[in-house]
Image (tube, rainbow, N blue to C red; front, side, top):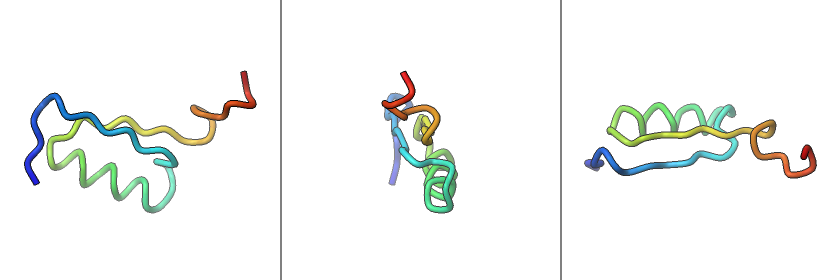
Amino acid sequence: MMATNDTRIAILGGRGMLGTDLAKICGQEGFDVKVFDLQEFDITNS
């Protein structure tokens, strides 16, 4: 898969086992990766 520089991916739960592997692979493929985990998207913590 070939990504352009403007392709962005958000990974929710990105600090878990699957999320870290996915973020690594997507980054190697050229995607702009943003990782979020519970602290960043917990809607009860506002």
